[in-house]
Length: 352
Image 1 (tube, rainbow, N blue to C red):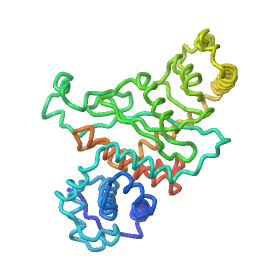
Image 2: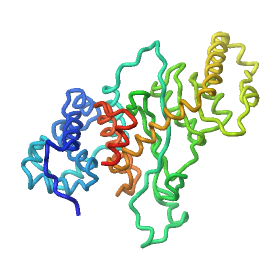
Image 3: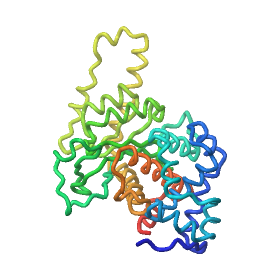
Image 4: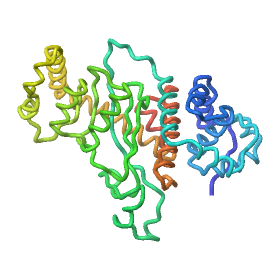
């Protein structure tokens, strides 16, 4: 049973939600919706505000629609004209594929980020978290064989233990903490196996630039990943090393094949690789400092799960999961862009 949605502008939570909802009314958001075919734009904005309210209070959209019909003050707060029926709402939201929702999220959040200085290198934090589905394990026994034909699968993380669902990989900028990219994987693949996929996606979308520092935890650890990050993507992959890490073994990975010397830019590339490798080796001495920085993405995940409905999803297809996760990331990025970007503030928001 959900509590009634009574608007109280003296409550800081309602004030924060009101500020976050304004992102759906901006001219840029309407333009991006029109480009992606999410029309009519005015109606789409209303439906997204309904979805944001449901995510913000961890409620079903059908209950929010019911409250909107009963409370004129809530309709005025959300700038909703005619309240749709649940069938109209879900039919409208199902018209758009998950790729459009993810693209809309990234494009809107890019407008909230400050433009990067081309001469300044960025620091990106990359990590993954479990997305658990709302399945009753006690009523039905789920085995790996039962889930072979399902879009979700069993997964495990040291933090959450065993679960059924997906893995969300998030890339955020530091120190702004604005989400820049997201990917959803079935089950819980090992972080080291999806490293190349993540890097290719960031490179293709031009999120990473030459000389950027990418901070990963130990789950992505591999000597080859250090070499690929520097030689293939020309970034500094600060993957936290394990106890058996040896610099001599790392340096042995940087062997240039003879055919490469026939390229005209090989001398320039060697200079770039050498500079990035020297930068990486110096950063190994500052691992403790970057461990504190990397912990910020864990606070972002905690806020998203505890306060924005990502802790346990009542969705059972990859398409629907990607849509609701994209909407949650958009709401998350909007709130962070309002100035809620410090560790203490994120921890307090997560306890709401």
